Length: 191
Image (cartoon, rainbow, N blue to C red; front, side, top):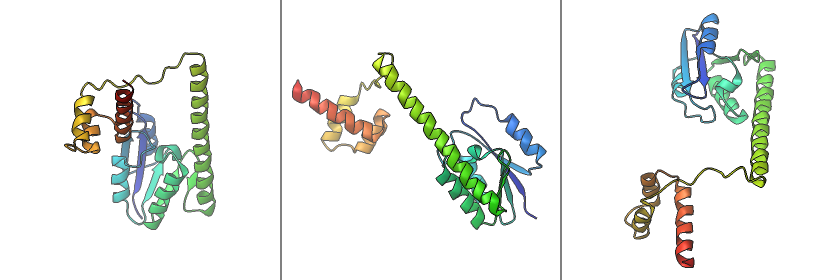
């Protein structure tokens, strides 16, 4: 008989894990991994530690599938990885147990429903932003102040630094650096 291992996740460091931890105690888990970050990213340190730790015969239990993964693809990928290691997965809230064919089916259905709900939330958010824009109430995120942009841009243009280094130096993504560079070049052409 393997170990019973719990996985707990909350979206931010400020959120409380006590409710999920108490559930893990009640379920008799022997080891619990806790992440305090968004579930949209699979690079969660405790999730990765847990996936490396589990062995054949172990059982991974979580409060709900949304605590384990945020989209169907990631959820099914993680469960498949556990299955290959001969590790069982149970989601308490949805009563899903991958040991059974019905559990495997329900896992797919619940994962798809959760993903659909997130898409609806994003769509409502986009619609709300569009309405706020037409009413002049939404200005978007204020542009980031980049006092060193011109100096970094010049070094990049002269081949003294790469775009990756320039964007890291400015604290922006590479795509934002390229966009800002194009805007800067256009403003100089027009000016």
